[in-house]
Length: 196
Image (cartoon, rainbow, N blue to C red; front, side, top):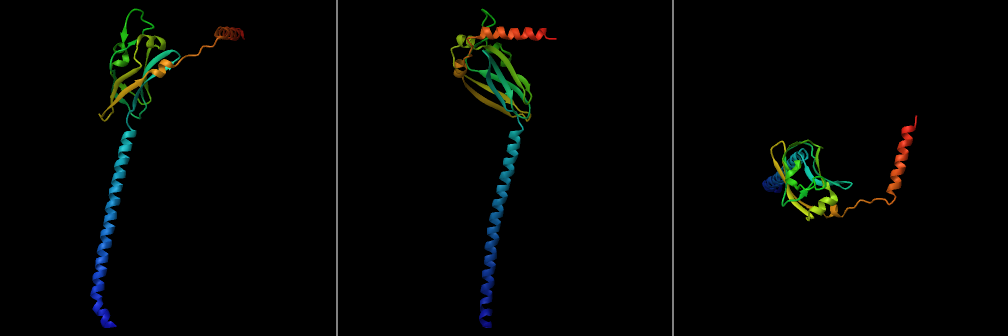
């Protein structure tokens, strides 16, 4: 029996050595794979942090009653620099106030580049009364570009394609008894003024 073990011992040692080499390579493979996954996670975390800590500037129209406003808003966590807004084509603004003069988007302050927009801040400019704007402008779609830089110097550009149809179709409901409501409010106001 001992002679059999002596004869087989080199073969067993060789098999154990081969098994150890195979296990080492398998462990090395999984180690390299885990290291690549960890590096990918670190890169994604770094990119996520960079994207989180940058400005996000948005443009929209706001309605307040029948008044239309153009609004640039920075919803990001850092300031936006050199914000510029441009539109294809031309449209008239301020029609309700200026009489026979014709003013266009290029006459508005929002059309000139803004140097700075703080996080959470907005630049809002009155555009026109909604009925006047749509009476003097046939377009129901506006295309343009919004461009700005972050503090790292990276430029961000957004292509704008705004459907104005919802703003055109929105209507203000006026109660039939608005005259009576105004009388009641005035009576309440007089009553409050007379109270000691």
